[in-house]
Image 1 (cartoon, one colour):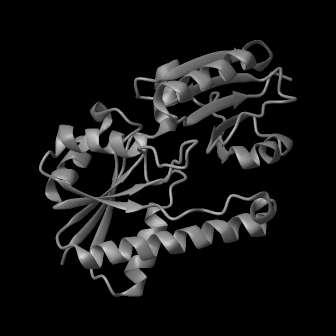
Image 2 (cartoon, rainbow, N blue to C red):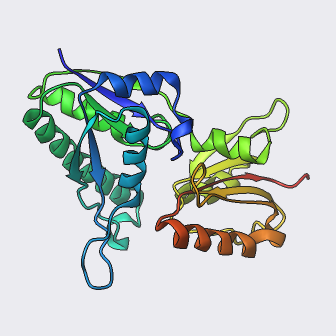
Length: 259
């Protein structure tokens, strides 16, 4: 039976693939890559830089791998739909369903073993595993599937700043920007924040932050310090990363001040 292999490819640099991930890519006949619409001011689509990053990974490690591009379905991000928890969950579910349909049609149209290249690690705030489960449950496209872990942004953030993400014997909470305030109010002392659409650090001036954007790429940016001291530097670095690469993905560790 054919295989679908969900491959964690790290945060962008081709050197960050594990040997297992390289072997998985080389074992496949094709890769399916979603591309996002990025209209410019005239309305014409600009190239998706994350597609180019995946192409670089393939060129480096599996140059014979054929790539099939799919248009990523548009996700409802309007305030009317996502301002409540139920609305947000519903919008994400609709997006997952549309993605599942797109993957299913591609699997039916193309033969051979398939690689799905996942940014970072498939287990951290990524939808690919859930979507492949949906496609498999439909039963139209017959396949086995597995998951190959990747180096996550959490790991790379800690490595770049030469830190441990938690204090001795203490827990760490990994959450999204959307739920950061909830984590702070609940008393979390070490919080890693992912899926950042913006950077809202108001009221956290005394907290320590270790921040990074576009980790593992040529546009990588790093800032660390007390938020009151470095918030402006982070804003400038974030803008610089986006200007240089056309996109920005940032992740950061927040640590509550003593007492």
